[in-house]
Image 1 (cartoon, helix red, strand yellow):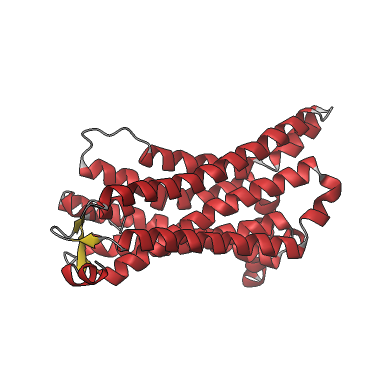
Image 2 (cartoon, helix red, strand yellow):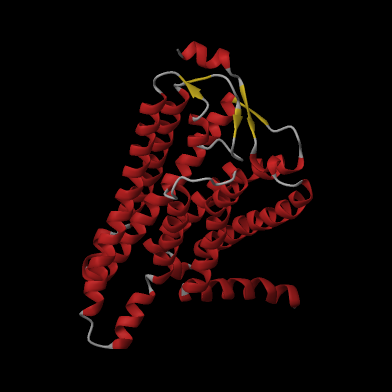
Length: 316
């Protein structure tokens, strides 16, 4: 079976935006290019600010740096290929390149979800167990948590990729997506294993993502209970403000994912499905640095100071 897999199909064609009117492609290209560049620059700005400001050398911002790294890598794994295919008619991708893209997109996507879960745990410890925070969230402990998220994301990415590319692909080689999307690829598989593999992929993905979401929600149940016990309104507001940026990113992350993957099956056009997919692959990473920069007062002030320090020598 594995030998047939290699011999029967050596490359795929990414349909992507090829079905869109050609006069619209330059506008889409410019829009997504600007969002891609902003995503890279925004996350790099957050990372450099955190590393340069000693006041931000705390577990929460260590996790934020890891989150920014995962977003950059996820975006690099998906968006450049989409942009190139908008400009050229040659949209083929080799079997190995397709498998690599799927592995990296799943790895960084799952790592992103695991990091959001760890950040929720960090907020839970900080608010519900403040006296034990420095013990539970020590430098060694934080490094281990970040390492486990990356290891877990890599295992999940490898697992899904091996499950999918164990199949035999025959007949049409046209992937009706702008990257090697797992469910679009499964539609090209032949043989009796197709339905069972699809079910296995769904179970693996849903179990991991819903498990992360459940633990995040559980953390915020305890956080809200602890905040409600604070006597002053000012104290409650100040405590909850430390969670707003993380909670907003979680809502955006899972909100767009649910719109795409939990939408009811119906007569959706391929163009609408393509545009909806970009909300998760392009728009969500674009929003994340904006949310953390604007909703996190400490980070926003640090970014302002960092920019001012660099502008003052230039002006003088």
